[in-house]
Image (cartoon, rainbow, N blue to C red; front, side, top):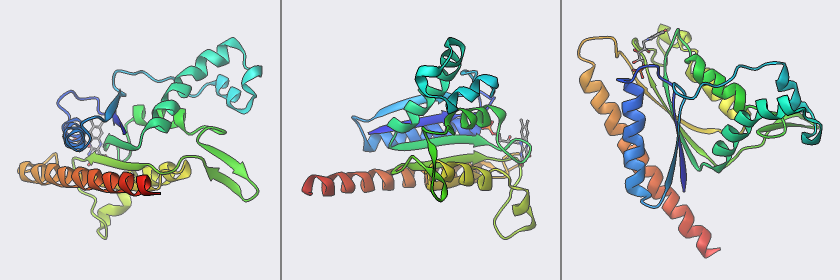
Length: 215
Ligand SMILES: Cc1cc2nc3c(=O)[nH]c(=O)nc-3n(C[C@H](O)[C@H](O)[C@H](O)COP(=O)(O)O)c2cc1C
């Protein structure tokens, strides 16, 4: 079993980092032999999309050395994504959306022929069978069914783009009101929820593996 942990906060004392670390700690209890691939986007500086991205539309044998070198980052990030059974993404809310390093990661992994393709009825996703947990932290609160909901450009965007490449089983865990006094208990509650979800997923995976052995 492989877990891909993606952190995108700029802050070393970050709340999302604490919560993804909690998720990983719980996941390891359920998968003692499992492997965790860590991708810290504050220390991995990803390239922006440049003209060399046009190489993604070419046969690999036609790539120039510059295109090959440029695309090697995307190749590696996609390999990490393909190898993972579970993905946990720490996503602070920045300006009502996601941090630019996380957007840069998305730009590198949403790639024609690798994570999506085109069929007779349009675009089709090429990834499947992965469970994703997105842990967000926000200074404010954007609960569903309140006027704040329409200001949340984080969850709708991430749901759409992850689904576009086939990551449709996505659970969001929001740590809200982190800019306000008294956020402590809500953070503890979020950590508890993470522990519960991680344990639950461990049991589901163990059950699925058992079923597969019986086939
Ligand atoms: C550049 C920047 C932009 C932010 N924009 C928002 C925002 O639009 N809405 C909000 O509720 N909080 C906003 N915040 C607050 C963060 O979401 C909050 O501090 C969160 O805990 C950051 O995650 P982290 O602790 O993992 O770094 C912003 C913080 C920063 C640094």
